[in-house]
Image (cartoon, rainbow, N blue to C red; front, side, top):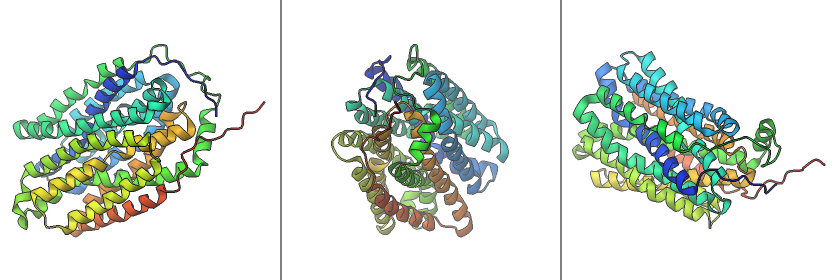
Length: 410
């Protein structure tokens, strides 16, 4: 594998500050969508399946188009892609606010925001990071960027709950649309001056890169594990608040909106430490073992949450544990991809493995609403999440982290 490098056009400080702010806004806003579940479905007299399907579609669109957006960013630079993403994000939130029928709501919240997230979240930011941060600090820097997204989740949960309480769901979404527009000037600060897609990182084509990745066993195993990550985190993010509300008859204290808000905020807070810690440890320890440990620990945490008598305190403890494990998979998974294949097509290949994550997200969001509407309980989905965590623990163990050897024709 070649060792050629490109001269960075952004300092590491610029990438971390503005890339961190980009994912803070993008990930932070979406993390609070679960708070809108009951207010929107109640106001429109929809079943939970309707809201769940919109969020599920959002995640599916995000995953399906992420490799395409990533390939465009690798080819033409990330700046224009991120500007378009910021515009779509604001339009999607505004569309959710003014929609009174299921189709328009689904287009706004599912299609537009799903496309926006392909351009404003980790894959595109990590592509910029990979081109401008030295390899020996790459996983650490990815952990920093992921921690910024985690801080956004912590920050935005009380903000969104405050907007909901003060203005109602419609005006809260319109105000969030204004906040999302801040991603547009942020994209300008991440503009890589004189960006050119050149061959100084090798002459491999997109088609060759895709064939190489899909034929690599470790890449396929990472992809399978990432499905589980998406299923678990999106199910909890979207359905934890209504789950707690449903149990308020037996456990009155957990039904208060403040409990769900605090729990989701704790996930975001402890996610900061988890993602940063994963980035630090990923520089020193085998990343595949760290990934396996994260997935197994999630299953254990869910089992404990279901078995221990429910209270606000046990909910907060569960949220803190899950938060520590929440997005810590991101710097590790992307770090392995960069380590195996290099950074020329990092945005595209990260997007490809992320598609599996979003297939899992679709299943977690949609099955939560679908099975609840048919059984009146979330228990089956919790059990699926546990089993998938054990599966991901097993499939990450054989991953090989060494750089791939390419045969260069004379």
